[in-house]
Image (tube, rainbow, N blue to C red; front, side):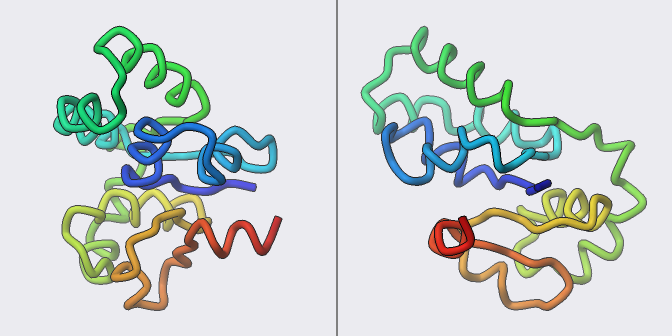
Length: 134
């Protein structure tokens, strides 16, 4: 099943391992997609993630590489024609690219941001909803 993964899910996996989020992330049930923009978001929060996780920089890089191997990063040019619709639909301007990838691939977005559900064009699923499905 294709599923767009939001930065908050990947950051959660980096900060705390052994959770249901991590378990689902490494399940073979899902094929994860994300805009390349996700890489920049992770880098932007790298120091905060390292501090919260207790990882050193090398282990952070290793974990990020492992997680990144599970994600098919979509180049901007592949979904840019969906941006106008995503801009109109997405309640959070920081998540527009995730919405555009979900629209392009006709799949749901995995995010724990409840505010993203304040629209009806892109299905947004939380960890709780995924656990009940699988």
